[in-house]
Length: 328
Ligand code: NAD
Ligand code: UDP
Image (tube, rainbow, N blue to C red; front, side, top):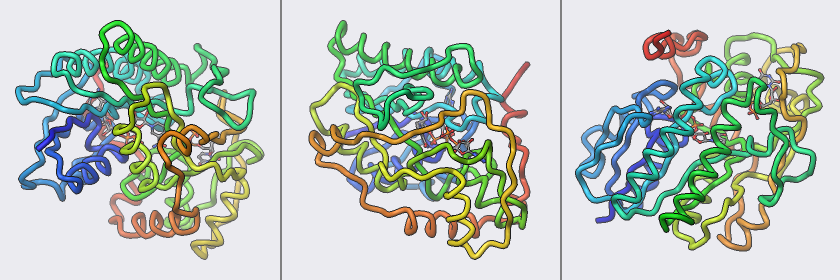
């Protein structure tokens, strides 16, 4: 059996990737330090004969005895409020963590796929965003800790590819959603759905004219899987190009869930990108991939997941793990 190490395994994307690789017949080693993830996301894998979990902070040297065929590096806070609360950990996991992951892949002669992001394009000046666009990032703004860590991560990955000949892949992930997102992670879908379930008003930031394009988790996982098994080492956008303004999206979610909530407007966060939509020509042409799940279906499945949470989870608006793992 081939073996894959997945960092960030207890997170939203990482846990779905663990499921995918186990279903495809791989041995999976999941690694996480639970700073933004949850043991609940991988609890169903406990006792699985081909799954092993290691609690570890990837910014520290990664020691794996077994042979590895693939490494998927997904460890990193991903939500703006997460990386604003833990900015230094965010910079470290994108830089030191990526260095460790690439060093491990080199030592094991494994293929490595790195999770990058549409945030490398910053608040983009071209639209939609194709991989050739260099981006418009404010390095010292609040989002800089995430954006620059991810840009460094891409540079480091290309250096390991070009200098050491490591077999690398880079996926630029656009807003992805689905079951196992943390309800209180501040991202727009859990935020709006949590507000509906608690009977609160929906908080639209700014005037809501900023746009996003939302990709369902199953489509995202399929795109990542295809990229890993392609022979293309330059970055590839994976996302859903169907774009919507945040205000229309809030109305859509209220209608879809028969919610009674109203919409209230709050300040737009600093450097919040005004437009985001992937150009997925490369994914279509090189990987033969495009998203299949429409927003209505994906949202219904996601809402059903949030409805299944306990009251304690629904009202846990302060994420306890931050206090547990952060030493000031
Ligand atoms: P998430 O917060 O649910 O998962 C991240 C996981 O990484 C968590 O389980 C967390 O505990 C773990 N982690 C963080 N720092 C770590 C460290 N130092 N050592 C070990 N584990 C650590 O977020 P997600 O949405 O699943 O994002 C996963 C990856 O995908 C991230 O790299 C993120 O940048 C990227 N990404 C996600 C999206 C999206 O829309 N979900 C978009 C762009 C990029
Ligand atoms: N947003 C909002 N209300 C919320 C949370 C987010 O209007 O309660 C907006 C946010 O300002 C951004 C968009 O929704 O324009 C997507 O935010 P998210 O945090 O999900 O991710 P981003 O794409 O900004 O990284």
